[in-house]
Length: 165
Image (cartoon, rainbow, N blue to C red; front, side, top):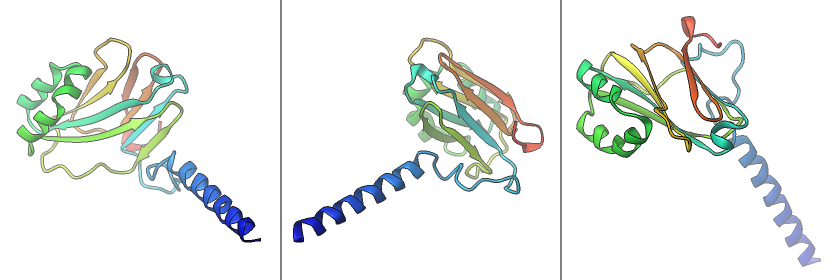
C-alpha cells in the first residue's frame, strides 16, 4: 500500500513536470497572446527544418550611434557571437542586445523590448547557423521586425505599424 502511494505521487509529479515543461516550450513571449494584445515589435518564427533541425542562437542588436552601427555592420554572425561580450562591455550606452535560443518550429512574439537609453540608429539581427554565411541583416532605426528562420538562413522584414505580418 505504501509503495503504491509513493508510485502514485511520483507519477503525479512526473505528469506535472511534463505539463509545466511543455508550456515552457512556447515561452512567456507567446503565452496568452490574442488579437487584443499590444502590437508586436518583434516576431521570430522558426521553420520546422531551421538550421537543419537544430536550435538557432538569435541576437537582436540595437546600435545607438553611427560608429557602433558601422562596427556591427562589418561583422558576420560568427564574428558577432565571438565578440559579443567584449562589445557589450565596451559600449554599454551605445548598444542593446536581446538574445534567444530558438528551436525549430518555435514562434516568439514580443510586445516590447528591454529599454534602451539611446534612440537606435540601426538594428541588426544575427543568427548563428551551422551552414556558412553572413547570417546578419540590418534595418535603419528601431522599427518592429519579423524574422523567419529557415533551413540555411533567415529573412528579415519590418512590420508596418507594429502589427503582426
